[in-house]
Image 1 (cartoon, one colour):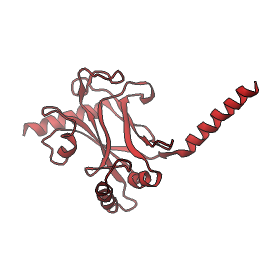
Image 2: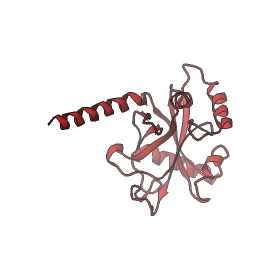
Image 3: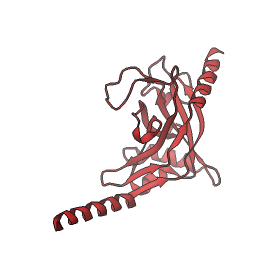
Image 4: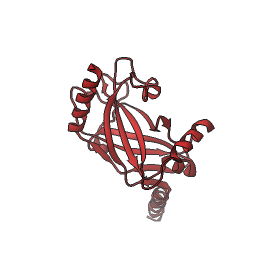
Length: 202
């Protein structure tokens, strides 16, 4: 009994410590949704790393008053995001390029070069309260047959659905990063696809 109680106490202390080590962005919101391909000059440097020539990705513009790069540097964190069909906690993962960007520059600290970090700092310095930091993430528009069991087959262009996402991240010593969950509605995805189709037809 004593051993079990000690084990339980240890687990509780560990959970409490992990909770204290986790930084949370509380005010994340969705500002824009678009479908972009390699023809988009602003997005091409990112898209060429994972997108096939004839594909498009769902680009989500998110904003927060939190400077993620500074937070990542202070806590020695990497920065990523989770995306799934809603609700996020119980749904299968969507295929995505897992990094977060500020004006095309990757956000984070671990694994980035000094040049990348300095480019981010230069961009972040241009944001003054009450302005919000605008971040971009990219989700594959479709996944025909994934080799990863957690990723389901889907097609946001022909069979759109509500998508939920949040920031995530951490490091090897247990510190973490999370945020409030935001939702991209099915109707917003349909509207984004219509606008992208009109733009490509010009």
